Length: 235
Image 1 (cartoon, helix red, strand yellow):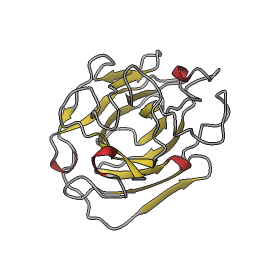
Image 2 (cartoon, one colour; image 1 turned 45 degrees about the horizontal axis):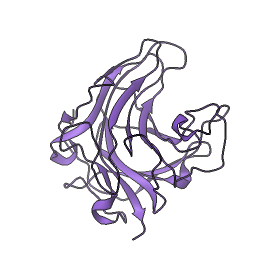
Image 3 (spheres, helix red, strand yellow; image 1 turned 135 degrees about the horizontal axis):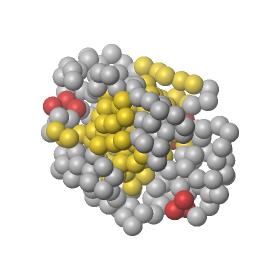
């Protein structure tokens, strides 16, 4: 794992007509870049307490979990025993980390997610316009990572979807260095060809959480996530 952090050189853009757009740049030495977040309210999870619950801020009290397909994909930590890993971004103590191998064929997936509320229920995040997080992969890991935001129309807990889990999201390509990604809710798209319903936009008034997922068959993954927060929030 590289311990270096690239100097800040301004925003870089990554866009796709299908998948949407995100902006990314390395963290500062503090690990945080101010992008209009409203103080402490915006912080979702920094992993510094090392446990499996997100920060109890802004009415949020959910938990962190991992998940996989049932085709033979493996993941650590397991789904019922998540713990943060030592060695966070910019010298912080802990970060979220998942490692494993995806099955060789079929609709494979593995990921780490967090719920905003416990018991699981909708959370109104409409005062904010997006999320930010810091991420990297280890050498030898797959680079493709899809950021997913389950909402009332895609999460089964919403009671609406007939073909669930096609969450609004965006697919990023990670590097071996810590990089901060800024994702606007307006840039998130559903995958094409499946899911019911298929609304035009995400419903930010009823979000159920966040997920980071790889879905490439037959690959190893070793992915780190840190300093998750809402951005561009109204007072």
